[in-house]
Length: 354
Image (tube, rainbow, N blue to C red; front, side, top):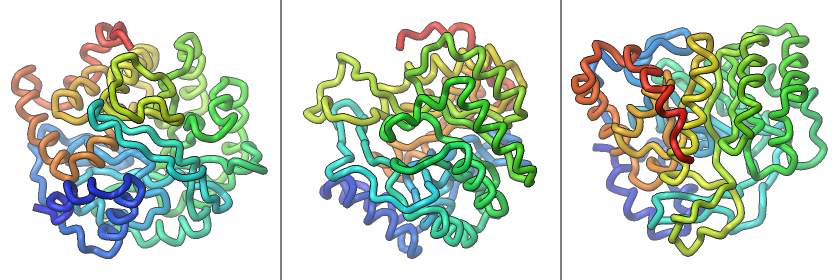
C-alpha cells in the first residue's frame, strides 16, 4: 500500500492548498510510495497510440507544473494530465482559493491557473517516464496580456515533443473571458491557428464546461470533427450551486467539483456521445468516486475516465477500488470488454436531471 494512502487522512488536518503542496512534494521526491494494481484484462483501452491497462486517469489541476508525474504514475493511474500551464508564470488568484465541502463530497477552487510558466513546465515534462503512463498537457491563457491565436499555438509547439496528448482548456471558470472561447467561431479560430503552424503534435483534445448552453453542442462536436480533433473532455468544474449543498463554504466563488457535478457532467457527456458517434474519443470527468460512477460515465459514452476530487479526499486507494470494481460490473452487464459498454446507455443518461 502506498505511503500516500496512509498520509491522506493526515493531510486533511492542513489547509487545502497546504495539503496539496505537501502531497506534490512527497510525490515529487519519491517518498509517497507506490500502489500495485493488476486490472482485469477486459478493462484494457486503446488510447494515445497505445494500450492502457484500465481507463482511470488523473484530471488536470493536481500537478500544474508537471513536477510529480512519475510519483503519480506509481500510484496506478493509467494516464495523467499535467497543467494547466500558461505561456508566462503567474501567481493565480488571492488566497484562500481552495475550499473543502466535506458534507457534499466536493471542492470549490478559484486557483486562477497559478503555474510556473511554459519554460519550467517543459523542463519538468521531459523528466517524466512516459513508459509508465501517458502524459497529457493541459494548456490555458494568462489572465493578462494573452492572445489566444498566438498563445495556444505557441504552447502546443512547446509541449508537443514530450506529451502523449494535448488539451486546449477554454472552460475554466476562474480566468475572466476564457469560457467565451468556447463559441464556435472563436474556438474554430484557435484550432485553425494551431493547424497553420504545420508542426506535428500528438492527439489534440478540447475541454468543455458543464455550464454550456446545450444548444451549442451540435456545432461544437461538428467543429471538433471538422478540425480532426482526437476528442473532447467533458467536463470542467461548474459555476452552478445546487440547492442540495450544505457545507459552510458552499457560497465561495469558483468552480465546483466532486459529487454535485456528477449528474450535470454525465448528462453532457451522453449528449456529446450521441452527437459524435464513434468519431471522437471522449474523456469523462466530474464527480467520480466509485466504480459504479466510473462505469456510468462509460455507459454515457466515455472511453476514458478521469478523477480529481475523490483522489484528493480519499488518496490513492480510490484508484484501486474503482479499477477493481469495474470488472465485477462488466460481469453484471455481460460484457466481454469495456468497449462493449461505451455509450450503451447514452440515450437514457442524456436525460439526467442536472
